[in-house]
Image (cartoon, rainbow, N blue to C red):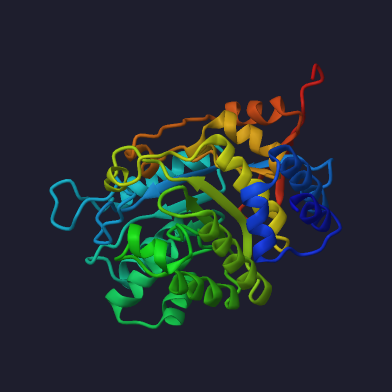
Length: 364
């Protein structure tokens, strides 16, 4: 049956839920690879390079009262280890990014009850004043929801005020798996699936671009994973604004959830999901390979399973590494990794506009 479904996808026909689930559970891995790559070519012809963005992840605070079971980064309110970074430190980190030719700042933090809308406005306006050309890709839907509650403002008011202060786009963090059953088990104090989708919908209506993410491999099933993909696809149909989809596997490490989840998603699990995402998400142009969690080698392999982007250089990563997973890749190494797969490498901006192409060495 999976062969017929793959043929349907190759003809350009949309797959339904049951067909997508069959592929994820049953299709031959190499058949998935072939189909995903053929579909990638519709969005990105063979001449297109593998893209990357020079960015830095700055965690402005580690204080959070969401207590997600998969996170080893946060500290509880009142902890002696809690921090809110002074602007001078944030400025220094951004200057280092800009000096390296970076174009994107990823701002992420926690649910810090002491930070209201005024803090975020001051932070954004200061960054925008000092670095006017920088793209500020910040604040997950969960953080935005937290701001609405702390500041007693509507979602629309918060989004409009953040954009006015300097926010450029919104990352898709906090999605995990977009089914209420899974989210209640792994992040019961964080926003439910329908609220994540609502925030992204309102952002898209305001012409704010976002990314869509998935953290799989904890208590979720293949059924949950396909439900997540369908929710993303449906939202994109009605309110387009997702620029890319990024999936990564749950990193057990030193997290509370590791005491319950004793397995680790395999490389094959990751590649199957990436390829099925490329096949199913027929309205999202870019599929990003997650070297930060999966490692650079598996990230490279994903280019053969429908992925067309290597993500960001990051420069700094604290959340995943806090769980015990560390995969540092320099800009030169990232370009080399892309070249090793036979592709040209291209620096992009947040909206996937090509800024610079690093062509394959002639010897290759």
